[in-house]
Each structure stands twice: as C-alpha cells, then as structure tokens.
Image 1 (cartoon, rainbow, N blue to C red):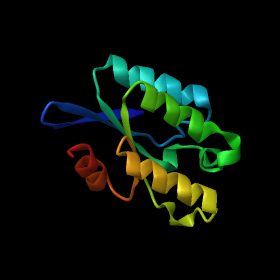
Image 2: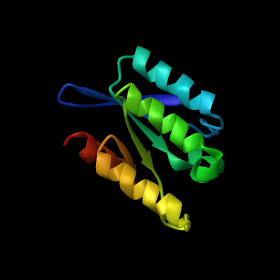
Image 3: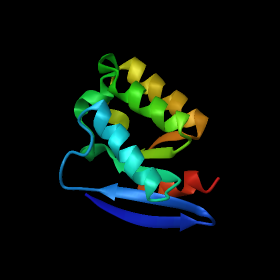
Image 4: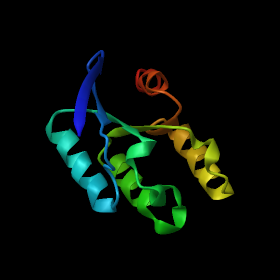
Length: 119
C-alpha cells in the first residue's frame, strides 16, 4: 500500500494505492481510517479496485458501516472508479445520496476527487 500526499490549501489528502485489495472487511476500513488520521490527513482517496466487491452490495452492510465511521470522524472520503456497472437501484441511490453530502463522494477520476475536496 502506498500513500501519496496531495494538498489543497491547508487540506491534506491521502491518495491510497495498492496492487492488492485494501478493504475486504469493515475492520480494514477502520484500520485505514486510523492510519490516515494519525498521519495527519484530512481526506482520503481510495480506488474501487482496492475495495472488495461486497462493499458495493448494500445487503452486506460493509459500505454503510465504513462510511458511517468516516462521517463520524469527519474524514472526507472519495472513491474513484466506474460505478455505472452497479445496476441495483439501491446502490445507485446510495451513491447519489452520498455525493449530495459532499463528505463521501463516488467519482470517476482522481481530478474529480481533488476538485470536490477543494469546494
């Protein structure tokens, strides 16, 4: 796992990349959040390819539990990927509602993620 730092004004953003799956369980998300927090980052960019496909099946509750923790601790999160393949109405609604909050964003590119964090 590699963390690249981006800064927008005083906001420190961690871009997390890996060739492996980073988040498979809720605990993985919490561990990552703690790691990022203690390194002084305010926001996180993750890639869809590094998150278990079960995250995108809302019945597993993995997404809800992880995203709730990020919200509670006020650590912004952007997940970069192609979300058009998720055809379930509940997942599309979840993404739409998350993006409205501006705290958790599902975006297509790193540039979109950084632009959202700068608002």
